[in-house]
Image 1 (spheres, rainbow, N blue to C red):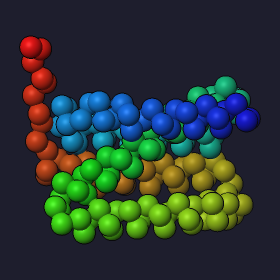
Image 2 (cartoon, one colour; image 1 turned 90 degrees about the horizontal axis):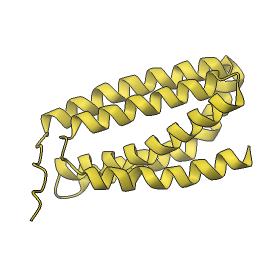
Image 3 (tube, rainbow, N blue to C red; image 1 turned 30 degrees about the vertical axis):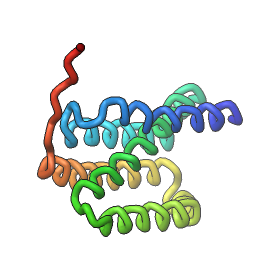
Length: 149
């Protein structure tokens, strides 16, 4: 289990790096929607896995997508408002969610069971993806690939 958490931490570092390398080359909506969909699949698989290998793969997928989605969220918020008000709101939401997640997740897991928690997280992930992609599509400005010199 320790290996899974250490690997997940290293994988989490790779997510924003890869996102930064791609930038807005594919627009804003497609990469963010793909990251949210993959992260949602990782959550659902992690909560419903009956095999340790499936659980490990799901946690690595979730850990790769989550920090990248957060970086994309802050970038999208910065693109919406140059004064920084949207970024402050996004960061406040992120901090509140991070602070409350262990208590709320544990309570829901105890109340509903971990499989139901997985379905709840997946449903919230799909809802978030719809909102996130809609906003990203409204502000989408694909950038051409840089030509070699």
